Amino acid sequence: MAVNGTNGTNGTNGSHAHVSRPLKAGIFAPIPSFFLPESEDLDIAAFEAHVLRLATAGVGPLIAGSMGEAHHLSHEERVTLIQAARRVLDNAGLTHVPIIAGTGAGSTRETITLCKEAAKAGADYTIVITSGYYAGALAGNKKALKAFFTEVSEKSPIPVMVYNYPGASGGIDIDSDLLTELASECPNLCGVKLTCGNVGKLTRLAATVSEPSFDSLHPRKNADAPFLVLGGFIDFLVPSAHAYGNGAITGLANVAPYTCVKLFELAEASVTDPTVLREAARLQGVVGRADFTIAKYSISGTKYLLEKLYGYGGLPRKPLPPIESYAAQTMWEHPHTQDLVKIERELSGKIH
Image 1 (tube, rainbow, N blue to C red):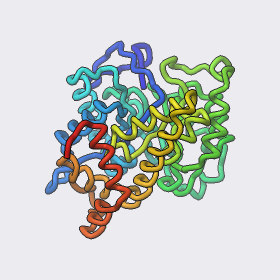
Image 2: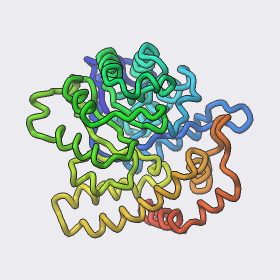
Image 3: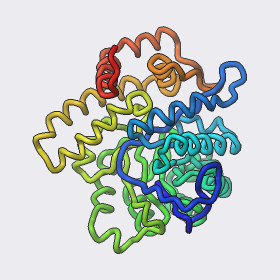
Image 4: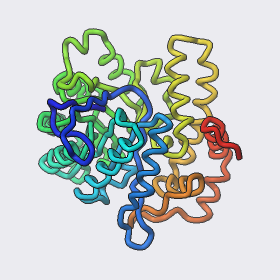
């Protein structure tokens, strides 16, 4: 997820730096935004600890996404989080780890503004969702949707990823035909996150952009930013690897980063080594079941698990409700959750 010195300011706290952080296939996590219990101000210490925990495990950070409650963050808070992430990564010697920042907003104008602010703060890439407020006018309007992503990508100083999440955009669901057009015609687009969960869409799009001729016919503006096709869930990671998918941006990686990275490694290896496929499928089953179970409890459930496992998490910003105590206990004690926790502790080297 890189921007080099020719594409704008990028570096710690917005300082200009000639740093290349390529966007590579793998596992990325939408990082939660943590809040102090009384004031609901940002809890930067917890945020930095979590970014570092995940990056150490090989998970790339996505700041101010849906899991990060971007809708509840001001422009200034988004900037603060990007700066904090870049600072803690650099201080840990992880200067090569890129940052994706959510920059979706209500209007095209504000979205572009957020892209510029994110780049200045130290983000390497942005991810943009269409606003669902006027979904009635946009959902069936291919021309308007195409114009939105075309203009945003043209005016953003750093590469832009399309975020297709009907559940958070009033039902707007971008089909594979339009995504293919955007990938072909917009050189500053660097991929798509498919939180629609449409495996067929992933297969069609990945088949197109993985063609050897695609890169030569449709070169990217930034050579470090190829067009990646990423799942928005991790429950179909192994099948997507065999269909030329490039990994996933998954909330589950917040809870079990080492497990998610291990699954990606096995999935990739199984493409060329069939002997690995059985183990990849076994772990995919564990992860897929846990993902389905934990996702039901949304942001508050993930934060509860982080509190339980790592000592930080807290509550979402109001009006999002906290998880009810009975629901938290049910989720924690569920066999799917416990199977995941056991594997994560083994892979991370912990003895419990």
